[in-house]
Image (cartoon, rainbow, N blue to C red; front, side):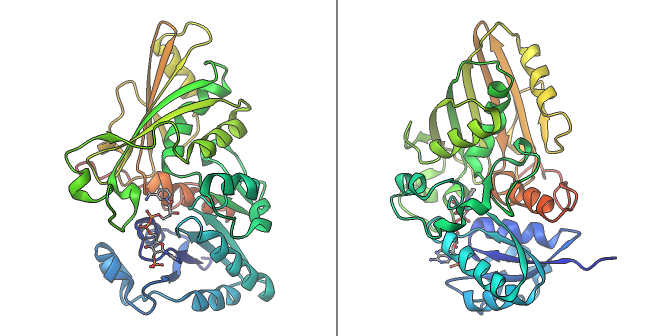
Length: 353
Ligand SMILES: NC(=O)c1ccc[n+]([C@@H]2O[C@H](COP(=O)([O-])OP(=O)(O)OC[C@H]3O[C@@H](n4cnc5c(N)ncnc54)[C@H](OP(=O)(O)O)[C@@H]3O)[C@@H](O)[C@H]2O)c1
């Protein structure tokens, strides 16, 4: 039996980092070698993630200097960054420089937005600050794993949660020439989508038992969705995206509507979606409306569709922390490491979350 691949996680105490750690602890080929915390180096990791205490033991958060030293000693390693955008690029760059100096070969999947762009100018236009490591952008590809067979770069940027749910629904419509290239997208996300730190507007008392839109038609993920959709389908489409805050902790529900190029009924659209995702282990196309509870805390995505006259609607649900972040990133990492794409990811949703 070959040794497990040492795995490093950046973004220590965050929600996505916690989900990456949970997946690594259950992975047959990876082992947790280090978790970087900017705010709590030396503290037990289970203090931030009590639900993982039984399997974490006394694993402690490490500093950036510790992690850089560690990556330089590991001939091969897996690195997941769940650090915030604006921080992740420079953290990864420093780690890769330490590895290059030592001749070691980490594979990186960044879950932040920092490496989703092909130019520093495009990044700065959206995020309003200079990119932290522009020379590294060419080393990253950004795609939903179902839409790009093999990354042409050594590292990958995960496209994010709203983008995953939207792209899974929209790309087949565009790639198969089924719709006109203007798509109307309504998405509802749970509160973990806003991260661990409670701030006004994302805090539980504000969000629970309520539903409201935010950043309608101007959300910063629109350029990322547009670019990924164009790369995956060959069509540059307009995405009119209205995100909403939903009164639940985990999960994203997206509805994509568009005008059909030619008449097609519901059964016809479902057949096209099934054809497009044939062989994709984590995408299931259902006859009935997809529900969050059937996928939450899993790496599965459920899609369904309806068509009436010239209008088509595709509904898509994913778990924002898993398929939309840690799980999708693990799919990519499995591929980068030459492991089966499904390794460590096939646990079904618990159902009654
Ligand atoms: N939440 C989602 O549903 C979701 C989905 C897809 C993608 N993402 C992306 O994934 C990343 C993490 O999201 P999250 O929801 O887990 O956020 P989060 O809960 O706010 O966690 C981010 C973590 O990053 C670390 N951090 C903060 N400032 C830092 C700094 N200056 N230097 C180094 N580390 C710093 C902090 O942990 P330490 O202080 O312990 O280091 C913090 O807990 C973000 O880039 C986000 O956009 C999130």
